[in-house]
Image (cartoon, rainbow, N blue to C red):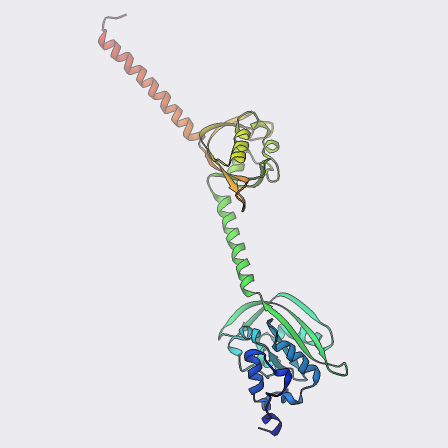
Amino acid sequence: MNQESALPTEWLPFLSGGGVMGAMMRAHDWSASPLGHPRTWPQALRTTVGLMLNSKFPMFVAWGGELGFLYNDSYIAILGDKHPAALGRRFHDVWAEIWLDIHPLVVRALKGEASYMDRLPLRMRRHGYDEDTWFRFSYSPVRDEDGTVAGMFCACVEMTGEVLAQRYREEENERLVTLFEQAPGIIAVLRGPDHVFELTNRSYLQLVGHRALVGKAVRDALPEVKGQGFFELLDHVYQTGQPFVGHAVPLRVQRDRDAPLEERFIDFVYQPIHDQHGKVSGIFVEGSDVTARKHIEDELRAANRQKDQFLAMLAHELRNPLAP
């Protein structure tokens, strides 16, 4: 250890405070660092480090020809297992695994050009394994007393949790959309007092005929349904907030262009959708086309009536064998 590195650092005002990293810098053995002892640091570096140490935002400074690395308390979490060994080391050695990604930005900063990156993907190794990370940060040149760029300064925030959460939400939305589309029942979401179609699934389009619905009010999208009571039911549910359940309700709809109205029978629910204030903002429509079931039930009822009539006639004949 040389004489300069042995000098105490507690008296240097720019290293005052700074939490864990301030204490580490005051106690650090700088003999192996390309930065040398803090007593020899130029005023520009001292000022930058003083500001960095007392900031709650993750920051680091890379200074000199070998870009000696200095950072504050908030940056410790970003380093992971690289802390505390990263203090005073060469920037390239600290982040060797991402150097190819960040080197062009470092070069720009050392040429006097600042850069800003938003959600830059970086594959880091800071906990003993490779992991995908994302960061928002800026690299800015730092000039010494004569105006020469002598280092760079970075303020950053890790976006990994936010990016992964957003990706998860998007994947969940895609799964929900797939389930929505593939659902065997009819499903639609209507918004506002005019009941504008926001979403429809495949089964709903099969029921009413494949036509453009999204973005249109029900009265405009399904004009042939006028007078059948459905629009009035929607208005009532929207105004009162009370759901409506219908069973085997007849619906006359034009399923093909220029074709006559076709009668279908549907089981359905009009369920009000409430906003964060409890006010009705739309209606969720769910149901199923039960036309085939209705026809079978009607045929069974007709067959049962015929059977009852036959049995009644047979019983009458047995009671009155001589009746004409």
